[in-house]
Each structure stands twice: as C-alpha cells, then as structure tokens.
Image (cartoon, rainbow, N blue to C red; front, side, top):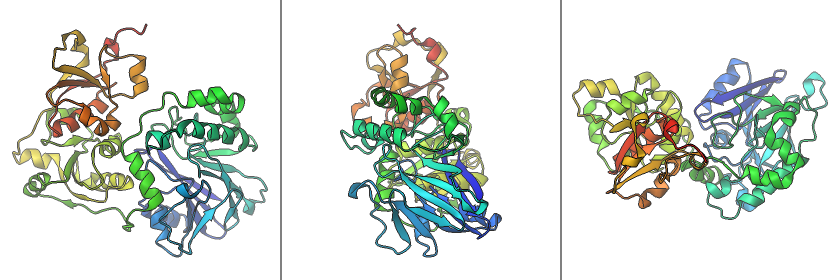
Length: 471
C-alpha cells in the first residue's frame, strides 16, 4: 500500500493519496481544488487516480472533488449522512458520484476504505478506516479522521453557527461530537490517526504540529478526546469555549462546497503586468490589490496605496484575502518575485478566488517612480494607553479569547478575520490604534481599514508586556 500525506502549510490542510501498488490504482481523500498536484504525485509513483472522497462539507477551502467529478473516469465518494441540508446539491445525478452511508466501503485494488459516520463537527461527517488486504491484513492500519480527531485536539462543533450563521447549533453539535468520540473509536491502539488539519488551522484551538499520531497516543494525551470519553458535560463546556473566530470566507466555502462552484480545470494563469497596466486596473471598481511580499516591515515602510497586506511566506495571504476580499472582486498581486505568482494564485484559488487577473513585482513599481505610501505606525513598547484622547480608540484585532485573558483597559476587541462584518460599527472620524500579539494581524487590519478610508495606526510589535497585570 502507498500512503502519502499532501500538506498545505498555508491552510494547515492535509489530503491523503492512497494507492494499491499491485493494481496501480489510487484514491485521494479530502483534495484541494488544484488537483493537478495529486495527479502528478500519483504518476510519479506509477499510480492512476481512479477515485476521490470527502470526509465532510469543508468550511476552509474549496474541495477538489468537484474538479475530479468532471472526469467521468474518476469515481467520487461523498457523505450521504446528515440529512437533506447536508447533502451535496452540485452532483446533478452524475453516474460517477456515490453517496456513502455508515459502513459502506470503497475498494481501490486490494485496499478497503470503510466509511464511519462521525458527526459533530458537521452532521454528515465521515471518517475512513483503511485496511490493506493485499498485505494479508484483516484490521485497519489507519483512520482518516478529517475534522473529527486531530493530533492533540478534536474538531470544533461551533462552525455551523459561528461561521455559517445557523443559530442554536453549537451545543447540539457539541453533544453529537462527544457521542461520536465516545462511541466510534472502538479500534486498536496502534491505529494510525490521519488528521485533516494541523497546527494553525482555525478548525480547532489546540492542534498539534505532528503530521499524524496513533489512537493509543491520543487516548493518553489528547485532552479533548479524553474528556469526551469521561465527562460529557464538561466536554461540551470546554469544547465551546475559546475557539478562534473563523475567517469571513468560511461561510462562503460551506456554500460552494455544498451547492457548487465553477469547475475551471485548474488555477487561473494571471498575466505579468506593466506598471501602467497595473496602476490603471488597480483603480477600477471591484478590484483589490493584495501585497503578498513576505517582509511585513518592508510593507510598512513602502507599499502601493490602497493595497492590503497578506504575506505569502507565512501563509498570511489566505486569511487576509478571505477576510477582506469579496468573492465577486478581482485581485491584483504585488510580489517579491515573478516566481511567486503560481503559488500565490493557487492559494487564492483554493479558497474560491477565480479572478486573479495579474501581478507585478514591488521592485518594478518602486523603480518606476510610482507614488508609494507608508503605513503609519508606532511601537507597542512606547505606547501609553493613558494618552488616548477623545476621538481616539484602541482596537484589539486578536481573538476574543486572547483579549479576555489580558488587554488594554477600554480597548475594543474585533478579530481581524471578522473585521468586514463590523465596519458599520466603526466611526470614520475616530483614530484607531490597532494591535495584536506580534503586529502581523494588525498590519492586515490597518492596511484594510486604510484602503477603505478609516483613520488607523498600526501598533507594531508585542503589546503583551504593556498590558496591565491580570487580576
């Protein structure tokens, strides 16, 4: 059996290519939208992808199953649990799509992949038990858990309410998740856990950075899993507290993954632009400029006016774009190098941005003499909160749980990933001092606010040392 994790650092997302080396056939579980990567990996190992499967309707990226389903030679398997509201509507009765129920199996050569209904994160969620019959095994070697069990954590049950706006869903989902965790993991301790996400994902609050684990290890050291199996009421309380605010684009991902998105056959191929082309198009309606340079300090010192910071190097581009750019807007990119164009475009494509029209390097802009802007900023270490005057305010763009632990007295918390939803509550005449933990999230927030005409100042660096001591 061939097994390879295909990991996206920016989205902290894991897909799995599983192949039978005897038959030369393979399946991808939880693919992202640019599926050429999986075909290339399969071909490198003399495998042909004949199937793709989803664990659930994803909220954080566009699933590649829609692209795979466009090829009639590929069989696509989707969850058939959860009821009509959680059944994919884009399938259109195609003969190469199968809806799986609990206990159904997929066969890829000598490999059996068995669906296990594990609701809680979402109602339809399936995990997949993987058994290599070709080696003579009669028990599963691994379980692909999607957003059910992670290394060090479990999937969050609140997203249908906090991201998709389904009111009153959090607690019932938490109770379903607890039941699944208590009842659906009757497996040997050596069973490998193949999670759908790693550290940095907004699909949980304490995900580990290890790429995989074993069920025995997680039973011992995964606090959320242990709690679910020993104290149901406490689990519900703990799992619903302190979850990070989901980015704005999560709601749209739920919709396009359930109802459908345009099948494009691959990521856009934006053109390299001249300075005059770029500056002209940047002024057009429904156009956003995303500065994807990796050096945040360089952006602070000089950037194209109205551009939003979203560094490519650390994956900031995903949440920055997903929290500030509408799905009907066109995107222009500012890059460190033309070599970055494909990666930046793919990351945006994976979260549903099909109109990445062009790019330019910052050096081309700078050397042309185009007027550049500086992001007004000060250092947290020198900021005195008592100096804030009438008509000024401190805006904390960290997560609510971070703000509640320690913060500046009188500061307002508005997580940067949900800033778009709060614009109507911000006064354009107010001068906002904007901060986070390191300055990265605040840079995104300030660049966005400045692009919209708000008066915002970046508080750069770590403000934590200047917070009052917690009582």
